[in-house]
Length: 576
Ligand SMILES: Nc1ncnc2c1ncn2[C@@H]1O[C@H](COP(=O)(O)OP(=O)(O)OP(=O)(O)O)[C@@H](O)[C@H]1O
Image 1: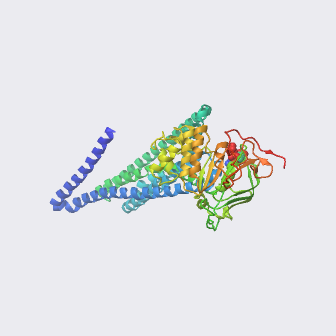
Image 2: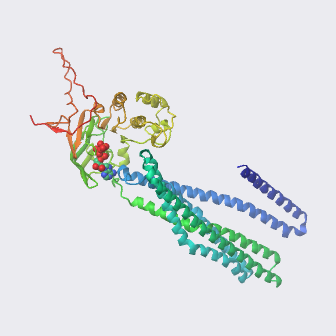
């Protein structure tokens, strides 16, 4: 670092000295009128070109990088839009490392296309053409000797292009695979799967090293060839120029000018070697972007979206599932399901593992559409609404929802950007997280928190979202019974006025709901409502309390939900 600082000072001093000596030269030449016109003007031209070069380089960098950054901003936006359009369901088919590469390395590769291919190519072509015209005006052979070797150097890059492009593509693919394996390994490290993946990671790392070495070796050979050809061009100009000077056909100073100009043009061919690799990487990135856009998302916006229906209450519009059938991976998960969730009501959903509870929630959040039947929102088919508009009305807690790598506050503010610290603090305290500072760093996915803490921060984030429909998937998983009871109370308070769909295997949160339904083998069974059907482990909800009577005294209240116990399959009771 100290050496770099020293270099920076020396560079600045060189700039100062250049300016000072130029001033000295110009003024000295001005004092000698006999040389002023020839020498003074030349010195001024040198200075002007020096300053102009720096200024134009700065402007070129500014405009070039500005355009590239704008382009990558646009490209990143397109990737995010593409990923968002895929929806939670289709996105689960993508590997996270691959999604990361699309938004990171692929966008960078596209960004470098202009900076490393288009701009250097134009600069070199422009300089070579100017050189050809100027030297051609002096002597055709001089022009040929000065420019053809440089052109051959550029053609050598073109000839090596396919090999360089192949290497760049292989490197890009392997880098992506390496990142994907690394991410998979990191997320699997807890269960020891990481060790078995290590040999693959090592193989990929070695493969990357070998590819880099081959690319560097090819690049070095190209650079050597280019340097040699540059030298040949200068030597050719000096040889032919000396002959012309000897014959009195070329003024001596012009020979020096020609040789130095050829040298400068040769330098401009330097960045050409990186072109094939950069171009191939950018093309591959574009192909992958096109592929992402061609992937049909699980759901699509309608051509003419209808306005959101008028809510039937503060809980938003009523929801209906009509004869809904969903097949996933060849299995019928939901079979002819009918459901009515009135605005402001609370429905508990339980049932066997893999029975389709999350699937049903995803129908409501429109992450997928049913193969048969309809989902209606306030009487309007869900596919007739704009997806983002409908989703803005939902607050969804996914099962095992991850936290983002940041502070607790940053995670919570994702639920409500405007929530003051006091509100966040109070909510955390109520959820039994009084010990967790808002500034606590949660780590990747919330890894620095316990499972129960992570679940409650995620729940708080969802509850903060001001949306009329609340979908909570296992909101009390990972919690001990006391904390669970505390959390249930918070959900009870926070859901007031909203429609609630609560998915759980645990009985305690079901106390929050008006009705409980179970999903068994793709069919919905209403607990205690359909004749003869109950869900064992859940008592039949007592009928609404009758208006207070003076006598006889009311019977003791039946607890809505018993002590937590696993929920077995429903039993069909004989019809009375
Ligand atoms: N993205 C997906 N692609 C294909 N099939 C899926 C996908 N997600 C889930 N499934 C399948 O759909 C079925 C229902 O899954 P779902 O997650 O809805 O069940 P669940 O009732 O929520 O289960 P659990 O109680 O275990 O969370 C399962 O057989 C599952 O394997």
